[in-house]
Length: 282
Image (tube, rainbow, N blue to C red; front, side, top):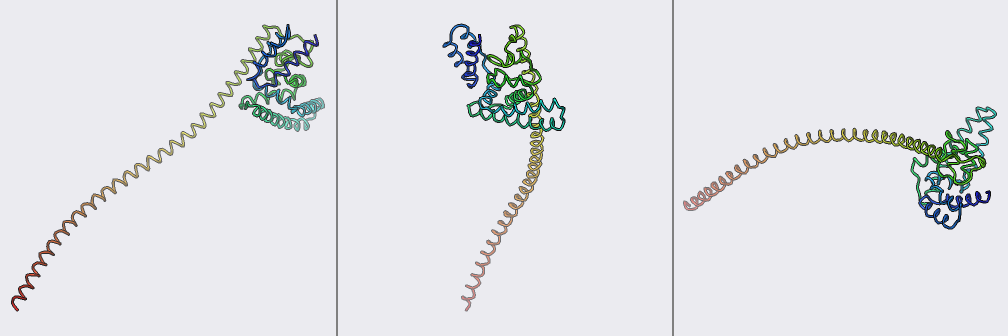
């Protein structure tokens, strides 16, 4: 029995570090190479969520050791009711969780699967569960997470469902029955959907507020531009009137110029005749 558990754990160890996109094909190939009950158990292994896979990467990278050391210190401070120490450790925990989540994001990105903000939040919740609960920490450190774990819903059955293969600390506890497991999974899925919906609603509200602000600015700019257009149209009308008046002035002056030239020509001819008369008289 122990050998069968070890064989399944070994298969799961190899599979749950793979990118989710490669999991199914690798699992099926490994199941095809096994025999008997082991082949069926490998075939039944569930594909990990992207967040669970990212935490598995973090475990394989050895980055959760600091988190579990902080977990031990936190438990000791709680036992001793050391309020100042609890406050300091709480601040350290938040910083450590955020840093480990960023590291998980970097590992996932290097593996070709960048994490969304929602997935990173699930990673943070799981790292936090590893810190505040020793059983969750041991389960998460297997590196065989199928789904994420939250500190507010940790029990043996939950950990069994969240980890592929055996779960440290609960070797003698049977897995939940099929009906109970289905109900629990349905509840977890509904809770996850509700969280996603809440996040989506909050994001939609923020986006609507952002667009509303941009709309108000756009309307203000449009109003200013329309006022400017009205001013320019009035200015254009004035200039057109001035241009028409200038055209009329040009026409009048052209007429006067033509008349003056005609008079000058007439006077020149008269002067020429007068000079000729003077010459004849002499």
